[in-house]
Length: 376
Image (cartoon, rainbow, N blue to C red):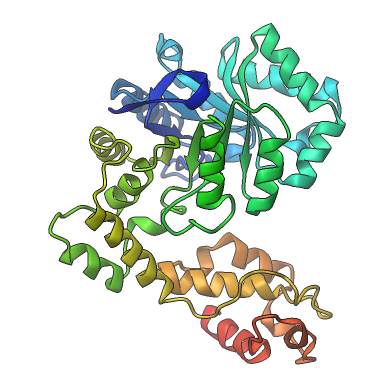
């Protein structure tokens, strides 16, 4: 296992961090998580050298922290650093923040949390956290030793990331990043900004929810033609670990074989490991994925709100993801939500308001119907 120094914190942690959001339930289907198997996987990772474990209050219907706490008995807690998160929706004042933190400490069976994150915040949520005294609370808990580092995770546009990052003396940030998200969310600019400030960056969605773990034909052809043979998973993780600003790459695993594969991959990667030919390959891979884009919707939302409630950018985003990554729309939670909320293209009456507002001058009405027909 390769280990990295976490920026200005000066501490070392494993390059591979185990994520505890995606554990499966038992075959019987009577529980959201197979505790025995999850505990075994967590301990397998730790025995293999993993020293960073990530969870959150809300993961797996609020059961993930409980299972992690059980897994870290018998001396395993002393071998790792835990990251967990405070969701804004669960707190509204100092008292509720204290109660939530104490609940998480109890579930994790520990007296301190190493990395405590404000969960998935954007600029507006950061302002709400400030308004209820979260900064003062985190500072107080750090002084009391109940948390070691004050952090945040993020899924909003770069401009909001820059604002949040510069607005407080953060110890760590966690962003979605992979070779397809170089200009999405915090993106490469956000990664480099944090690195310039010495703030360590933990990476989530390195495989984009598993979408990058199985390459479509045009992408696989590029991998196959390269002189060195690696799996899509290894290429994705290798690309991430090539960046010196990356401290930890999170990966959720459901099988012992996945843990073993990750342990092997992360025993071989370090900053600057990729040569010019490998970096060009990944640029070509990105271009090959993007060539499968069905519509050039940027998600700017100038077309919104639709007078008839159609989630126009949402429909187009799902359509592109189905084409790009082979996602089954029936299993896509965003598509399910669009249908459940009656926000689909079947609500479009062709009024044209969206097309008049679209800066890309897209044929939205026609393309919505094409997308809906393919998705349904």
